Amino acid sequence: MPQVFRRRTNVWSVVTLVVALLLQPILFMVLWLSVNATHEGIPIQQPIPFSHQIHVGLGLDCRYCHAFVETSAFAGMPSTKACMTCHSQIMADSPVLARVRASFSTGTPIKWVRVYSLPNFAYFDHSIHVSKGIGCETCHGRVDQMPVVSRQAPLTMAWCVSCHREPEQYVRPRELVVKMGYQMPRDQLTVGQQLVAKYRVRSLTDCITCHR
Image 1 (cartoon, rainbow, N blue to C red):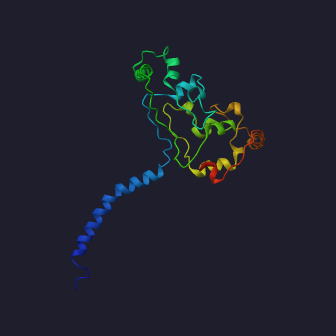
Image 2 (cartoon, one colour):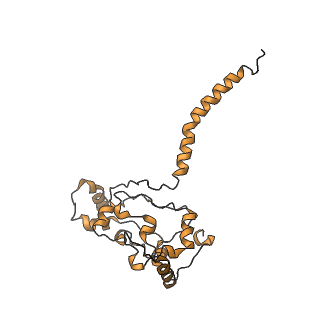
Image 3 (spheres, one colour):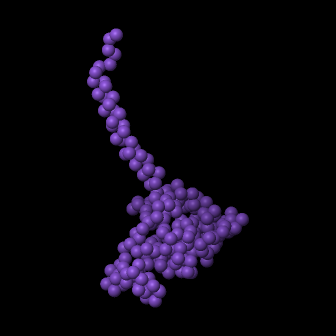
């Protein structure tokens, strides 16, 4: 019986099999990155251990550390001076806080790692959202239950636009913006529409709203 395939076909078969086996880890990594592109649920380690769960549990207001959230696009990160307001008396000699004390004595800021960040082509203003009644936990989740903070929202355009299209589904009274564990009322649609009118919330979905 005559030979159907040339002998070098065997070589190519082996090469193809080897290449396929080598590419599997790469393909798996690409798939993993595509699924986890938003980095949701991945705890972000900070240069100094900090537990929101403990600090919020003690009654510390979000605005004590994030002092500019009501007046600026950027919420702000806590200064070492803010930390030492308490820790000059509480855990004052703890080895865990050695870098905080060093930062305070040298004037070198602590380089906190941002958990939430947007690309340069997207604009976001904390102050306008807070003033319109969007709660901290709407985007950041229950930080009062997080020993280590992780991103709780995808920050995709579709996710943002869904709120912009129907703000009445998410808005709450301004005085409860920083409240953790806020329960939406059963008639949220009615209450939300009233708050939308009261706070003059506009349903902005034009590209220029976020891409300036």
